Image 1 (tube, rainbow, N blue to C red):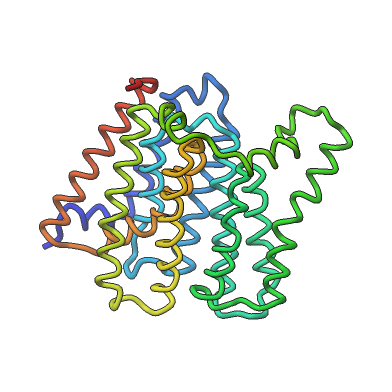
Image 2 (cartoon, one colour):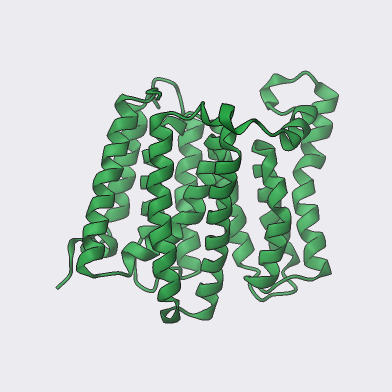
Length: 316
């Protein structure tokens, strides 16, 4: 007998219904009034790419859309971030990067795929300079999890990251000031090297921001524990990909805690890298306890969505 959790996880209606509710939330938050069409387009395309990422890599052993559904729900719990063009572009580029990156699995001749993966990562770094600090981690993961790292692929990754800067920086220098670009090389370098006092940075966190971090962190912790205690049920390739998700999600949370002033960008990274793990947990468990966990998580997510819809600026 299937439980409510499994009925929802395996239903073909789950993703369309959640996506429709998310669209309504965008409208309720002022998407039409404030003309957030570019942001909504980026978000919709991000969801589509996550569906493709899950399908093309068989992230779930059953037919389910829980990975993309979880991403939508997590994003809706932080609806106070809907307005940011840079944040939505960052999400889109990071998922596009993963889509190309995973295609290089065990392929030491996938220079083109690696180039495009890091091209999108480079574009994302234009929105958030601190992403460049994670490049060494990505190279390690290329060698350990994707098993595709050699001199040629390393060069392709460097060229991919550098390409957006080769295009944008000369344009900015020639046409400066050009405020429409929203990018200044000097400010970008300063952002990369600046570190804010933690006490001052945490003072900017509101109750709703803390609640979102706590919610996703608890779910992620349970999902990681479940996956790695039951990983023998998945193929080696899937275990390697989920190892990458585990490392990147944990690093994103650590970065968020160490640099809380970058909350708006880093929490988006947490959503992207944790969604496959949380989706795997809810889609592939069927016990009585996990059913209660699922229902509780749904209730808390709904409470967060309502809280952030009506009380977006509540401070400590």
